[in-house]
Image (cartoon, rainbow, N blue to C red; front, side, top):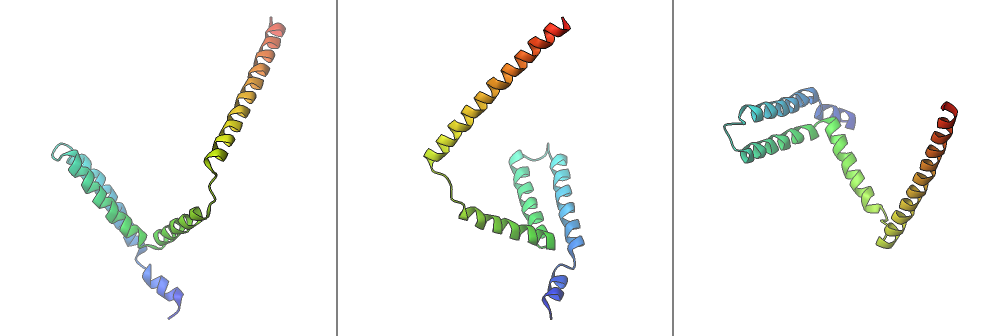
Length: 124
């Protein structure tokens, strides 16, 4: 059996799984508002967390959910490869960016004030 047939059989019920996810999420939201006065906030939050985890589990077992999960794992691997700057480099870069922002703001303020003054002379 080829891998295409295995994947096709594995993700054959995707529309039904997505329907279950939608029903779980909507059911949780409706139940939360319906039982707002009957149960404490803590119990409703715990119930919503359980329903959310169940919906996420069902969603990950679909083709798109599985692809999204693989993307998250690949992103985590890439983040581990990043060489992060030191504290000194971060501080120096922040100071340079702040100085450039202040200089740019002063230049734009000067242009705005000058052009406003020239416009007021022309208009009267």
